[in-house]
Image (cartoon, rainbow, N blue to C red; front, side, top):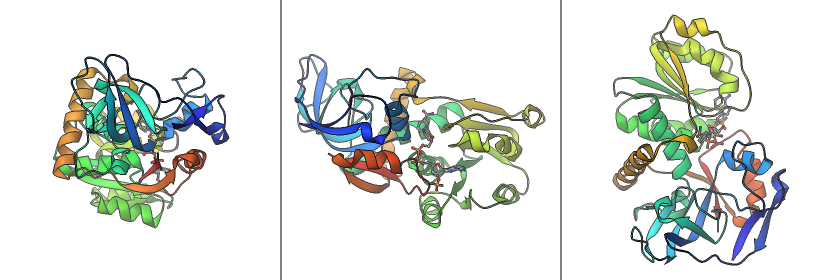
Length: 320
Ligand code: NAP
């Protein structure tokens, strides 16, 4: 089978398309024919060797894939041959024609969701769901600012928050991103590259502030976020690529808080909740993964460059 292999940590050029043996499932494992793999920003940090999780080399990247069950190992009961599934992590990596996964890492993909969309489910929707339900404990009467609403996690958050009944504000950096954010659930959108946009956000709330901020770039925005919060507001740090100084007094006066997490640290109970919520949303159409760009597997290096560039418009997926 064809797979992307990483033999040394480094830039996107270390992603090589190679011919490798197709793995065979042992007991409790499943072989999935991957039709599409989702590219997430953390894949690039991991490939660079700078992420908390450092895989042993060589490895095939990718936790998010969608496809069809090819064969199952002994004792597998959750899925059977030909089932359509999305992966939430794999054993051998999703940037490949086939991936081995534990049966518990596989989840049903409703018929109305195609494989490209299925490749954009786990990390984006899992993160957005965890941020809104478990971390922020959002209520329908609240206002959320999705700070970075045009990318994978942001679009998922807009759709979930809108379905939960919140008032939803979103930011993006390009006209296309703003249009997608509006279409996918934001009541109001703001351009995070325009000077003074934070003032516009405050005015939209009649200077009350927002209850929740889902923050995709905390190292740039966190100090200003604390000034946008309403009383008892919370910033949920989802993404950050560096350090930042904040003034804690902005939090004290508002009884506000900053919370943060990584999807790797969630409990099995939280994960079960997330997949149940995702399945219901995919099935009833409130959750609709948006694919912004499709590239062949061989162009994984290009995907890793482009995922870090401004101008997001949904998910980048690799066709395997
Ligand atoms: P993505 O698809 O590449 O989207 C990036 C988003 O960040 C886009 O909406 C982009 O908007 C926005 N952005 C760019 N500049 C910004 C600014 N100054 N202020 C606010 N937003 C800005 O990435 P993603 O998959 O959505 O992930 C977003 C971040 O969360 C990444 O840093 C990722 O590593 C992190 N993440 C963390 C977890 C976790 O477990 N904690 C899980 C998933 C993702 P424009 O392109 O329109 O400017």
